[in-house]
Length: 112
Image (tube, rainbow, N blue to C red; front, side):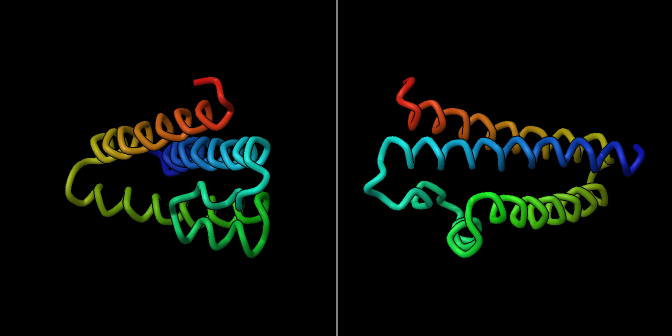
């Protein structure tokens, strides 16, 4: 596959993850203003960037870090499998992550 297409697919997956995480943090802050809103983020590295630079810049910085990491993992997987299988594996993993983020967004929005 072309590198640009793979990069766009990975960018969409990471962007969805980070966007849903930011929305979850915002909803948690609205419904629980007495708590630290960044405590919902279980990833310590992401939480560190949120606390140091704020939600917007922390999301953008961590999106870049996640994208670079995901591209590296994709190419490492490509040596073990072919590119299509590697993309399917990462797609399945990120689908689980995105589903989890949607669940917590709905929970903190008090929809479920």
